[in-house]
Image (cartoon, rainbow, N blue to C red; front, side):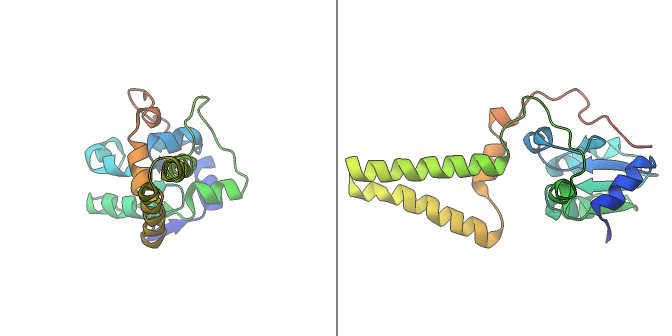
Length: 182
């Protein structure tokens, strides 16, 4: 599988070489992205791949590189031959202190939303257990078990659910991410 670093990506974009596709969800994209990125969430790849030029290199990027590796496999299965995964994704881009574009009214990052909701549910469970019935501590135990499961499987059901909430589905332009490098 072809890969490149964020520094390599920056150089390629400056040369006008290829198209950068951000495969994160809209809320994540709105919260911080590479200015030349074209939004195409991982779940939309199969239905929107025809918007991409087969003759140009396609660079795929997400938060850390995991979803973009999945997008790379999907695009290759759809007939794209030059798909490059950006190693480390936006986290690596930010770590290199490269420029990030952000929507003014972007929602909180999904990780922050998960921490907030999980903390709120745990706190509610503790308060209800103290004031209403001790068995209600099970609410907090359920969230704790969910967090452990999330860490072990490196997935997050709460995060996926939060991504579907209205505040993370900000109105998109008709053709999201129309920016395309040469």
